[in-house]
Length: 198
Image (tube, rainbow, N blue to C red; front, side, top):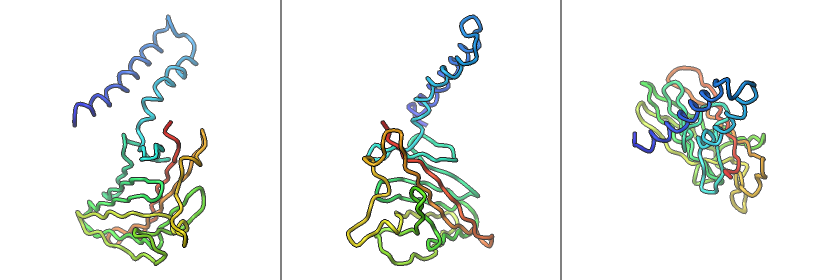
């Protein structure tokens, strides 16, 4: 790791240590609600642990841990990474298992603000997309969008910074049907929240 990464990790830990130390100094803070005020000072530091796109929108996992500038998750030795864009999302999947992983794009889902849709791969067409195999210790890199956003006039945006009002958000869920070896297929849902970065 570089020195910058160590500094970014050390700053929130030091601030948290100071806040806890101050809270337990009973001569200065005797009431419980002071802890809430002190921890709220730490929130801006923690809020940077999301992905910021080129339109200055913040995208973060709803249910999984967020890391600095990365949307990554590992389940059953399969690595998933998402690189969002207002028009399409890049999905990187790496198979770190000893078996073949199958991804059924035809049953995949792209849900934007509760409106479910199928998935279209780049270059975007209305054609059906096949099941794709990922060999052991290999990966794929695909760009996808919701198929219902493809119109004869062009491709509509998944989210738009101008349409996300102050305090508002866009909800995005990507559902990937995955089969590992001979195991039953499971539907892995990744849910995200898109907000204005500032």
